[in-house]
Amino acid sequence: MFKIATLNNISAKGLIYFNDKFQITDCIDDADGILVRSAKMHDMDFSKNLKAIARAGAGVNNIPVDKCSEAGIVVFNTPGANANAVKELVLAGLLLSSRKIVEGIDWTRTLKGKGDEVEKLVEKCKSEFTGCEIKGKTLAVIGLGAIGVMVANAASALGMNVIGYDPFISVKSALELSRKIRLIEKLDDLLAEAHFISLHVPMVSETKYMINKEKFSKMKEGVKILNFARGEIVDDDALIEALKLGIVDRYVTDFPNDKLLGLENVIPVPHLGASTPESEENCAIMAVEEISDYLENGNITNSVNFPDCSLGICKTAGRIGVLHKNIPAMISRITSTMGELNINISDMNNRSKNLYAYTLVDIDSPVTDAQVEALRNVDGIIGVRVIK
Image: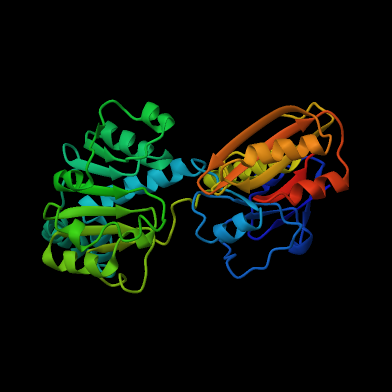
């Protein structure tokens, strides 16, 4: 029986995807796996029993990924599960940035109590809230993952001229991207063309403050920026200066902070990107499926710290999962040690990702505790799991 702890309210429609081999527990120390949405986990101590964490969402900033990697804890996320919800909010932000809808609504509400004057006042003052149409304007999409591709395709369908930048675009994203989207090789060239910019990159050390004073200097005057990715991708101080200079006409963000609140041309949205029941359900289902497949079969899909690796459903006498460092000669160390321990390999899959790797092995007969312990002691191995 695998025990699963939940740190947030996880959609019940997702939890029902656990089979009878799983049990929800309130005790984190007993848990084999954790499901989490937004709970902060950086100050948590993890028990040796914990094998996996699944984030019901794309970002994993609330999870200490490096710490988990060193402890042999596989961290999953759910890329694409909330993509449509975010895409729809980005499109709303696109329209809010081009037309002074928010200001117009706020002003109209002040007319309460004016009686018959309301209609005349509306007609008299509506010119103060004019804006531009998005059709024919150029939208630059930075980051062409699941959300970026959907935003680019939808904006193109609305008549925008869409350009994109992603030096690491996947084959899947490239195939899903409309042929109308023009890819730009250099970020500065893309920024120079754009009337609107939409950010869709993950928050990592390389992307922190990627939109900074130097990048603002490359933009058209009056550009409108949409940030539904992460707040730290934009340098707030440089943004405020760009707003004052008129380089940035509007900034719409799903990640407001105290510096930005109250600024006239900032539209702060209270992190609503994935806040739909459909999105929460999709994320929960995907997270449950990922953590179930790992705990039951040893397969890894959509991990942020270990590579995707699968041998399907185990049909042999046993299966072993080996988490290890991605260094030379590791596969030979693993296989030679298994040979010395008289463990016969019937099938094997090895994959690597950055600093870490994973080797999944089907074997002809069950292993003993002593054999597993000997395998754990091989230099470079982080953790060994007996799946079956």
